[in-house]
Structure formats: structure tokens, C-alpha cells
Image (cartoon, rainbow, N blue to C red; front, top):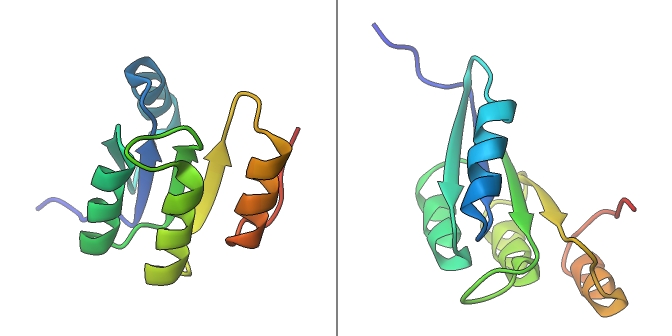
Length: 106
């Protein structure tokens, strides 16, 4: 009898090498890792599956990670969302904070 995962992690990034690396290194017992390479695919997953944590890049298509954050906050406010970026602009940081991001790390 297979046990259902206790937690769901959603990785969202256009870089498939990063998705492969993160899946390998973040895997743990009781955790199911889901992966999407576009924001619209991620939005569909979030509507269907209760996600505990989302780690997503700010730079996504067809809309960015800040807009995805806003969709997540509206449909699943208990979901923890971590936005990543190589070098976010000040305006991206401000917009993310206004749409529900709790802070940033340098």
C-alpha cells in the first residue's frame, strides 16, 4: 500500500537544468515535488492540488513570477511562495512586496 505524500512542493522555472538539480537535492520522504516550466502551467497545478510551498523564478512566461504570486495568494493564501531571481530590479522587489511577498534575501 503506497502512502500519499504529506507535503507538495511546486518548482517553477524555465531552466530545466535547475528543475532537475532542485528536484534531486530537495527530495525527501513524504514530499512530492511537482515541476512546471511556465507560470500558466503552475497556475493550473495550484488550482488542482493543495501545494504547501512554491519556489518560482520571477522571470517566467507567459506572465512573471510576481503575477503568479498574486494568483497563489488569491487562491491559496496558506501556500508559502518563494520568489527567486538572479538580480531583481528595485521595482520587482517593491511590486512583489505589494502583492504579498514577505521579504527578500540578498
